[in-house]
Length: 457
Image (cartoon, rainbow, N blue to C red; front, side):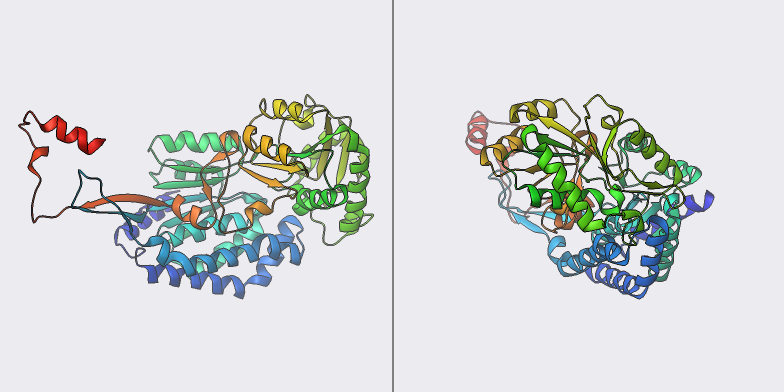
């Protein structure tokens, strides 16, 4: 653990040299990383298969390609994002020049989870480096193979005084939690997020928390059922349901439930085959603990489709549940697996009333062709993000931030929003020395208040 402390101090000293500040340095760092990812792409794909059973295509679409895209985006935009932004001075400040200077925080700690171990390690890292920070990255021990490749890549690209990867063992986490980081970026569960925030408070360290929650999938009576089912199956069962923004449950209008269930069954067979456990493109559960947790949930509910499992290979087929209520165990926590409960509602007002009693989810999905329903859900239901007539694609672009609210997190990243998350906006006033306005200084005359009243009006 002494080594971790030394690395933290080395990063602090390296940041203070100012070497990470030049735009050319940051761009070169990202280009080295980009080249190394391409060089080791086959190793990354193999590691993701060993950790999560991901196919080559899924690994590229959901992890490798996304990181490469984000890296290219920042290489193109760092100069623009870092440039000082002129602002108009107030009357009292004139004739000063005012501007906002974007500067890095310093030494950052990035805590990544196991479900997208490559993406959720490197996407925030790329953003942190683009903003001019150094980074210590801790990865989940559940994704050991991916960690080994990440460590190999970053050791090839960066000295540890700039970027360092280590596995998040309890002693490592305890040691790092005591260091006065300049920013902490955490992706994981709300329970651990609370601990991270509590530890950060000791040093007044700003935190970004990317958490999760039970993201609802609301389907009203006007929805296009076949297309709705196709998009729900895509968003729910990619990565075997181990996605923080996966639709956690369906909340559909009672009149279309049977039709929707039939469409979901059809789509599961189209996308994964009649026996998904024999499909080489269908992944697995991360470990036996999570497998048994999901098995326990399955035993407590009415399975209407799927339910097959393979303990040896830690696989569970896409599974649908009916006759579920909000009081059932499966509805008390984020499922984080290929289990999809189906509940029904009578009116959209019932949906809104229920949503307002639940913790704010990371994502909310609404399938409808009713503009009034769209408007009222957007106005009255809190969530980190929203997809209308689709799932999970709201996080795919560089021009919209991704983050939670309340129990699902705080702060956001992706693209420019992420650059701002890892940066401090420093307000700068540069006053002239050619002349001075005397009325702001004491002693004040009888007309001072009138002058200021005019200036502040």
